[in-house]
Length: 422
Image (cartoon, rainbow, N blue to C red; front, side, top):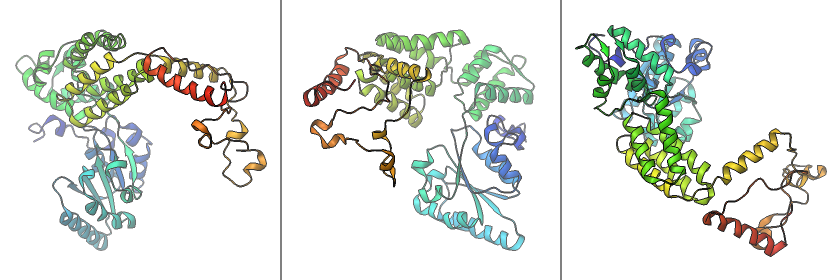
């Protein structure tokens, strides 16, 4: 049966020692493992991307905690199903003294009334709830349920952990893999352990016709042909060319390198992150919409995924390439960081200190603070830097968008109170 089952299923960990890529949670002496093995497991939410092992981890920690494991999917289960599980769990506890772990996959898909059903039993401890979600639970899970659970975040698989999974898969099938095929297989997985094994499973079938050696062509065919081989050096060179083309305001070149990276299997998340960084590093306040564009693209990548997210990434790439450029934010951040690391005073002036607590004024805290909104133009001459620290960290560029903000800032100061305090 294990030979017939998909590779990802046949390699599913049988114990916490077999889990790959989540040592911060279930490695030796890790907190979640300690709670499970000491039979002190409480209701919790597992939050992480697809393919990081949430379902498997839930089952294994429940087993380690000595709990009866029951699973429901929020996609196909309703209020009736939840009530039945709760009732059976109470019977099991009363008759056998055995507690139940209820695992709900995609718990964020439960509506409020369904989630509310879980509140009494999680609060009483009659049932240990483990909910799994790929979505931010602070937005998608009821606050009342969150307050009764602890939140544990799973990390996307690293290159090292994905390589280990591939090696296990190859050993299970008695096969090997070419170095370039391994590089592309791991790189294109985007941190998804199940995904890398699914692709490998197909590639292994193709490799059976040539001595069970998985080649780059096998990996490419398993991924619907979307592959261009690149070495590690060329990968970083292409990323560099992509960023520098946007910085250099060349939309054609930027788009060319974007597609080169995507066709080579580069992670859409990786590209989106680089666009967000670039928006602040190379554009900044010269175009206030640049960061919004990049951040929206990053969210869209998570929402729609590839291949449709190629459109979003192309949209953001062209928009950022056409934006006015300024590194004033980068330079200002560097100047302040250097000053602080060189020993600049970070003592807060007395008038800026918190003055809301009793007796604060006895220490001079908050005394003399001028509330800007009480003055014309919502500005008043006042010192905000520590004593001995001069201005001059932020040097604006001459880009029109940035200049307009700076000119407005200066005109308010000079027109109302004279030159700003140095």
